[in-house]
Image 1 (tube, rainbow, N blue to C red):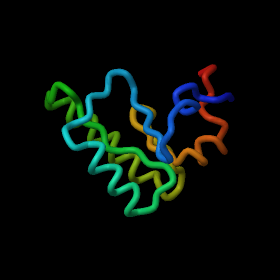
Image 2 (image 1 turned 45 degrees about the horizontal axis):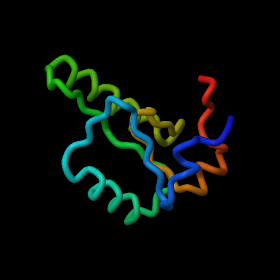
Image 3 (image 1 turned 60 degrees about the vertical axis):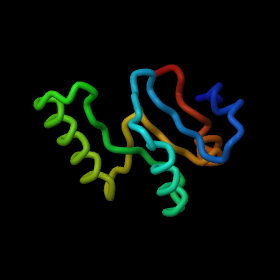
Length: 100
């Protein structure tokens, strides 16, 4: 694993990694950063919602969100589309494996 280029030049304590096709809703940053700080989290993600709002897509996203929440006590992990991390934690993990 190696350094993540964006993280290397970022100046804040909290890093946010978004996939290129993610379209956050209005006030996303204000709300999520507020909760991140209030709960003193080290890493976090958020629920996913489909962009198009089709019923089947909404249903499948809810199943995926439920699955991730249920596994949290036993196998915490997060989908890669939206990740918050403290700078020190990202550095301690040596960034992302860019060979994947």
